[in-house]
Image 1 (spheres, one colour):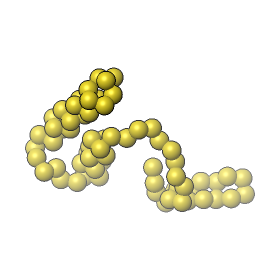
Image 2 (cartoon, helix red, strand yellow):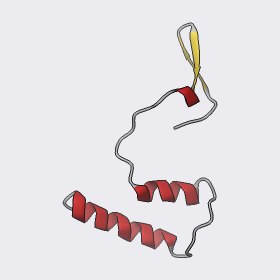
Image 3 (cartoon, helix red, strand yellow):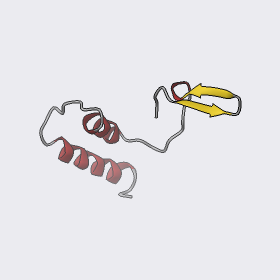
Image 4 (cartoon, helix red, strand yellow):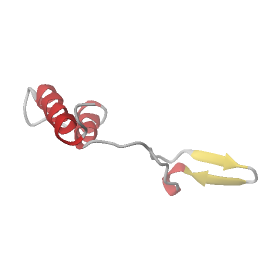
Length: 67
């Protein structure tokens, strides 16, 4: 999460840009999907979604035991 959003903590106001908010594990597939879907980055292939779904499945099977 990042942006020029002011956050007030008592008498202090801080921009969200200046903070690091911890998140859970984020896969590369999620980052690519965010870029294409939310930021409007043009995909290199028309079947980008299926490619990301397959890649995520392989990641889960290999590194997370299929969870």
